[in-house]
Length: 212
Image 1 (cartoon, rainbow, N blue to C red):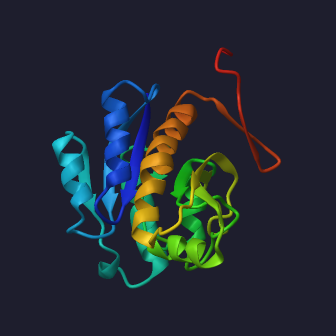
Image 2: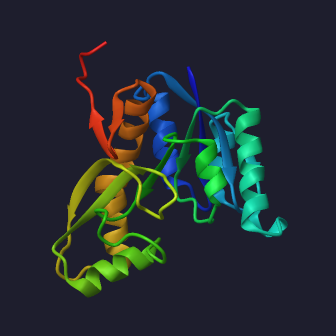
């Protein structure tokens, strides 16, 4: 059974969908053992506690720099033998040493169809504001492996979401979460835990569901 650690910074809606999927038996071969928040007042910590999952606040402001904070994260995850790290609305910058500690074992969900609307500055509502300003007709969400390039890791799953007339960033954000993020993230975690993801030349292949 693979131990999963989920990193959050806020309300934890994506975390809740992971917890729901786990409780429904939709994540096979892995279990969420730890939730870490970069903010002590994040509601996601309460979600974890209610589900009987260890919840830890590692506040970024208590560390002098990105590297020391990243090392604290790595230590907390390694102490609990975490084999898969999931970034679910984790808005705190980490160093390359964090990524190197868990190579091809960190997943992130991004509220756009990467490589569009990704990279530095594209997070939260900023993504949806940019989508509407550009006038694209289809947006969506992406789950990808995390590497040293912001939003630049190999893509695992994507799902399109329609952009509608009259959308505001808030309305579009809600639709992307409901129609894409909340579905893709538990699916990607399940695929990873069941050994169904194969990475070759920076391309993720999903192996045959019936293959052993």
